[in-house]
Image (tube, rainbow, N blue to C red; front, side, top):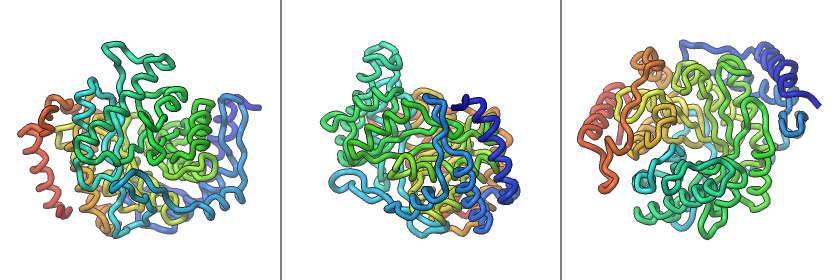
Amino acid sequence: MVSEQEFMRKTLIPNVRKVVKEFGIQYNPKDPVPSDDGAADRLFEGAVDFLARTGLYCDATSRILHVDRKEIEEAIIHFPGGGTFGEGRDRKTFRPRSPEDQTPPWCHVGTGIVASSEEIAMAQVEGYGSIPQANSISIPAFNHVKGMPVISGSPLEIYAAISSIQAGRKALSKCGRPGLPILNLISSATTSMGTIAATYPSFGLRPSDGWLIDFISEMKVNFETLNRLAFVLITNGNVGSTALPILGGYAGGPEGTALVMTAYALLGMLVFKGTYHLTCPIHFRYGCNTTRDSLWVFSVVGRATSRHTRYPAIGLGYAAAGPCTKMYFYEATAVNLSVVTSGYAGVQTVHPARAVIDDGVTPLEALFNVEVAYAVTGMKTEKVSGLVSKLLEKYEQEIEKAPSGKVFQDCFDPRTGKPSPEYLRLYHEMKEELTGMGISFS
């Protein structure tokens, strides 16, 4: 038995530093989307070594779950290589990709950002479902029920979790895609009890949906996590192992963050028995992952894991700027370039305004992300790295004071489902500018 602090000080942090040095993992700020396969291979081997040395800490028992190299290697070898999601004509198989793959990525659209009303939540989801290339969606979270704030662990949490899914289903039926799978965590459920309650198929998540189950930063789990995991595995659900390592936290800088982020993918296969993986680094200082070092982490981890595993991963971006701003479009494009080119199997709508503003997302961001993901599919890494460097020049100095943009009701009409003329004009202007930079939209 060891305390959490002892695990961090004596095991996690020393092992990160040793493995980064031993395997020559090195961040190059001048090359935000690296094409070096040798470096990606060293990162992957380093992650296997790091995981075998470090294990996974359970704070509920104050014990380390140890794994050995053979177990890790067997998990990689025996992983089936993707899962099938959705119902009817929207039932599809989520397959792995490789760097510079010519196959468009799985497009997971939407966010779990809080919606202030059921009307707004349904308008958002209907907009997501109306995007033809959408393969799966995220549903908004509810933080109020009939004017009452949702308290974690209370009956209102159960009510909110179920209501959010029902609203999403109604919206998908309205746009003619009732079989589209929901692959985010039940955003309104903050406890395992809420997750389990909202999983009843007749009114909640279906077996063909997905359940995001999170590791805790860094290299930790608790009983809430494991209770969710036990239930979903027993009911034969699709587990989406989820990891958001903190860049600048216990893992250190970009090299250590990339190492830990790669190790989480291995744990997703080995411990969580996942069907898919959701991942993104979160910058400790800025709360987003569109910084130069974050994009490097995205890229090198995607190349490492896609070259050595068949575990399909979704790359999730957090932008500093909000909707209806030029900066958001620059940031979202940079994330898509980094993720799609580096071999991630899927990409999710880049979350605006650090995902902290209620109603702070619209379907137009989702559409733009899908269009960029398709436009950059198959691009060569060297070209992409140059494009990302040019985009960074346009916004990276503004990250700390990024504009929060507008909320849904200020730039979208919930009744018609249409963006405002101002937002539509900006959207077309940005696509024209990006076309001039070398991104060809069909």
